[in-house]
Image (cartoon, rainbow, N blue to C red; front, side, top):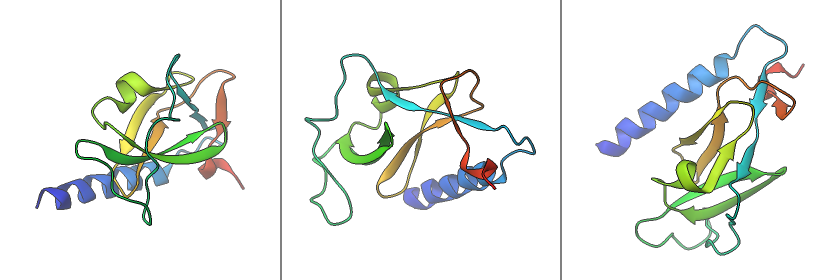
Length: 119
């Protein structure tokens, strides 16, 4: 029952995200590792890979143009492991693997063009 609520929340978030904005210049923040952090020691995970150890979840990160899925602690991933650029906030989308992304309107030069604003 609890997983159904999570799926419902994810679908709602994705629906609002897909709606986008009328502005052609929508930009998205970039995900970056916090100083001193690394994903190199975190176990790889995914559909065809072994499950994560208990207490960790499988999350995909797009860092410097490359997506990596790793076993991390969901409770601390946004607080301790990654940060977002341009005034955006880190968010986790629950799927499998979960997605770690930046949410909100990005301002400044350290932003990427939003997928929804592409022709």
